[in-house]
Amino acid sequence: MPNDIPRVSAILKLLFPHALDFVDESALLRGARLHFAMECYVNDRLYGFPPTIIPEIQPMVDWLEREEVEFEAAEARVEHPTYRYCGHEDLRGRWRGTPCVFDYKFAESISTQNLVQLEAYRQVHTPKRQTVLLQCPRDGRVRPQIIKPHAAHWAIFLSALNVWHFHRAQHPKEVQSHVK
Image (cartoon, rainbow, N blue to C red; front, side):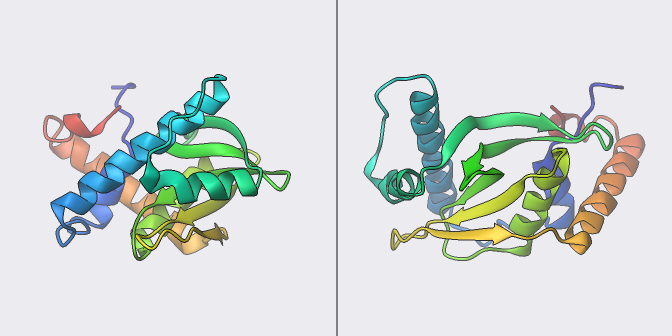
């Protein structure tokens, strides 16, 4: 079926099936809430509304404003034209004149899963955009990290995408909830 385009998150679950098992439910909810708050803030700015800012995202907002990041889109759906997977980028914009894809992580540490995810998003764009991971742990200090292209992360992602397609062919009803 041509509309069965897997999401990046579904592919990552194949690679890292237990990645979130150790994460407390409240931490997952906090991350989802803060991502939504950032989406609202960016969209308010893009569409000329007074920005809505909750205290937990203030350090991220301060960093984006201090660094004069130009916003293009928040939570924009992207799809790879050749490999046919999709996902939602946290933020697309320009930083220091360079086109970027930003990913927010409201976590204490960064995992390989995060790096593979960013490589999948980087590969969607032609020409390629710089990927920037904005880590903001509970201490409130934003730690920007420019993520360099990584051939092994891309190869791992493509392998998992192939496994997803194989699994889908074997169990089409089981994977239906993981498509767009």
